[in-house]
Length: 389
Image (cartoon, rainbow, N blue to C red; front, side, top):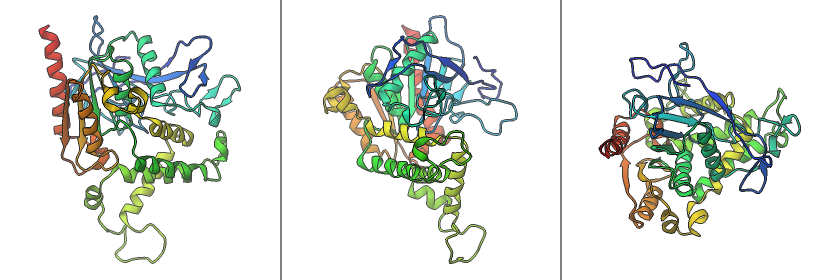
């Protein structure tokens, strides 16, 4: 669907569409060795695809994101899409120039097929019978979805965090299809520390008595406590010491003295509880398990270079922009620099920018004139090159 464009730079009113993938009779074979026989993908589009179909940009969301990346669904919406400041007419991803597509990943819970979806074979939600997924599976499904939308070449693609992992997988798996790529606050593999945080979050869900081995669909009691704790743990890793000190310090919430009780009296405690409460209202606990595990499995060097990242990056043909943030301790800058080094060792066309920010890992989700300017310049140079050809 083409959004309505208003004069304020907003992508306007948009609608999430559902695409049913055309699969072979045997279904889609996943990397775990199992198959899925029916797959729906939620997506949104912004701007117009050219007759030559050469201006498409794919946006790949992070762990708990969705397809609603810009604009709003109704005039009454109080909040626009999660990257609204980057996408729209005159913005970094200029919808007067580019056709922007964002899909909800397989395994998610915002319209695409995942553990909460109905298994056609049983008529019941998949739950833990849903097959294990990988970043590679997500990318294969995205390529199939784009093909059904008539897109066989990408002008560019962009992703932050887990979305950046998908970007890297794209340019390794389908190097001929992607002209340029932007990877933000991401990594070619999760560190042991990142895996550890993910596992603590998963255990919070699994040990919730209402999880019941994932069979909680249709019940009034869901593993909300476990999922909220998982979100609280994850959210801490998305912030930085600087941003938490600036935002909360040691201030108390609506009191001047300690209560000497376990009441969540600090502002930062109240904030984390609020984040957890909001999260359980929009996300599925089983999806959280599957998607964090897919992140943990991802290792570009092992998958494509027999353990050598330089060898893996020999496949890359896209012009690439890699960006990191000084205060990101979840996927710190040295992980991005490792990827940049491997690309440069292959004489790849790669640019690297480390942005100074106090916002931590989530800095790419915070409106930033610098972030917008760097991305806009990267895309504009590529666009002008195409115009000159």
